Length: 327
Image (cartoon, rainbow, N blue to C red; front, side, top):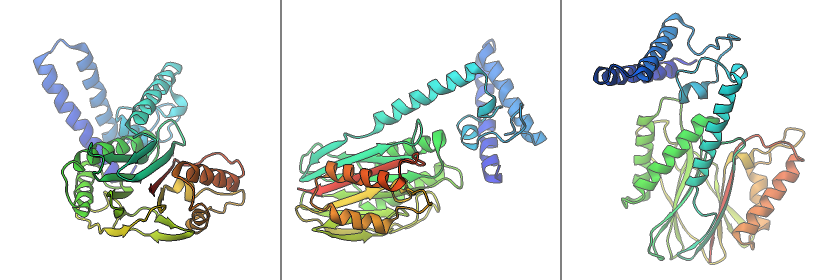
């Protein structure tokens, strides 16, 4: 395990130890707290001995994302008891339900825009981020966000939930888009350990057709207009890489019938049987051919093409697509 991650987990354990000691001082007869303190002390002891993060049965490394989610884990997934496996499965099912509950309506018509998205985790939970935020005023601005958190599984889904809460709060402040993304980057960077980051497209669409777009290290957004596609590349680094990162903003106007297409690498990196990726260039050519379709049909056609490219191979990554069409 990397030194930065080990130090992060050590800090987490020490903080838990302090809180447990305070709680036990107030309620010394609480047996559950005393047992939990023993487990924390044991984990800190394993760190001192150099055996932390090693499965006590097979002596292989425990999955990193599980340690981040629960620093007291002592066994890898292959050596959980039947009861532990059942409880883990229940936890994952609950996490999946919570994550689905964070998603916005799949079809949205507001302020002259029609929006549809597709959100498909590769496993029980996803590290992809997708949201649509608009004011109650039907002519108010529409914020649209789509991103991809580093890592996979539970730890990535926790970061996705953090992004959801953060942007839901920040968009209500009314900051210029560049400042909004810059502040989100600072909060995200300061609240997570080194090496955790997220690529993200954050945009604001107005009733007039004007769109502001900040792309934090994500794949190019595609503006689709009458059979022509314009790639809108990144305007800054991914969130969480540097706390003082700058994020530029691109401005464009979408006319009636124009679309904006956002996606994660679960689409662009779909591979065929020879290992060749679908790729952004192929995706742009395909999008140009679908320029007259409404968002839901556009996405359905895109998913069909990606499936044909993969020749039915299992989905290897989380997959999210979003289309905004000017009505």
